[in-house]
Image (cartoon, rainbow, N blue to C red):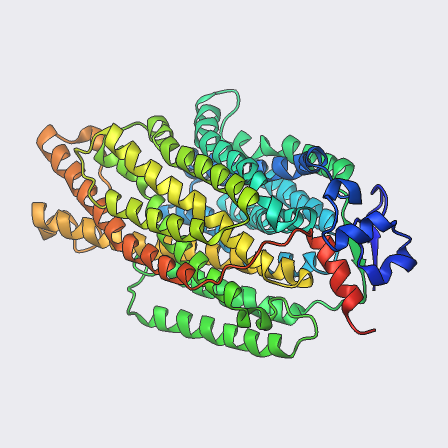
Length: 551
């Protein structure tokens, strides 16, 4: 095995393991850096300014893919109406991207351990561009759904590879100082998406198709920036990707996510469809485990789950996904239906949570870099997140905007301290050769938890709203099925007040269900053993481990 710089990289990667020094021709300063004896800047490792420059294309790519997930939220009603779609299609425009993104994350992570990370990121962005073009020109809902799959695959690659590239360039001890950059990108894209989407839809000479076109020039710019600024060493060795395992994992996950997306809405949770989909999904995943256990290059190395830190961070990430995404995705509906706010104002009302996330992730990251301690932030973050859900379980249709903003800030602070540092803990505790697999595994389980949480907690919300409708208006109000969201503008004031109270109460009950799920994450992180953060980058660790391996 040899380690070579990518085309255009400047010099040989810093801190090759000592056994390779005579072959690689690396100066003594690099050898000392490999032993942590001298500062990184004396070893040839990238400086802070160089890292920021290298991350520019990465951050731009992340911004575009996150923006694509949020920009369509305000545009979907117009899109579905123009293309003649149904309510079911409305759901699947969102679900198809989530399915393809979640299912392909492990494959992207594994390929990052085997191939050029820069090339893979550029490939994921190219897929995203293709999907955006198809979506923008889509003449019908069928082609639109196909385009969302391509967008999801590209977004899944971008999401998985971003943290892997960070770990390759930056030692775990230094990762904290860059958390604020990631938080800023996430916050800006989350906030800007719905606002930009609303403006595009309401501008007659642009229209909803520009919700897809607008990301294309930024994606192309990101590809060009990555080519110019991102230079990572490439591991050259014979590889064999376990495509059968990848297919079985994707098929099993998609089957379960399709079930969680449809159950409770298109068929009952206890129906034969549920039994068929759950049994089929479990069987496919069992076959995937059997295949992975025998593969030379498994997509998800099963051995990483024997690592206590990885296993516990996976559990915590899944629970965070279920509670966070399952709980907060319905906030916009609460803002609009229970509080009577416009879609634009509803988008702005999520700002406090983003602000709390930004500040806490930045401050916690800086403190971790300075002192090298990280477990306390996981424990405190998970406790604060649980407290945020408990506070939100007290809201109703009369909750003041200031009080609601304070609750959202608490939730954002907890999430900011927890989510990114779970990845840091796992990356710090696995061999460098498994950085990609470990990172993508955490991303995968968090996304899957989010998808299941949205479906399961969405069913809880639907059932609660329906039961409250029956209590107030009688069984005839729902027609024997689920309650439908009424047109609020057509309702008389007394009925409108009751409807708003129903949605306020149901939403608070939803957060009351999410709180104990979040508390389980507290129990998971408490048992994670804190280990000193490595001061070597992922590439330096890989070189050292390769040199130490028997030849």
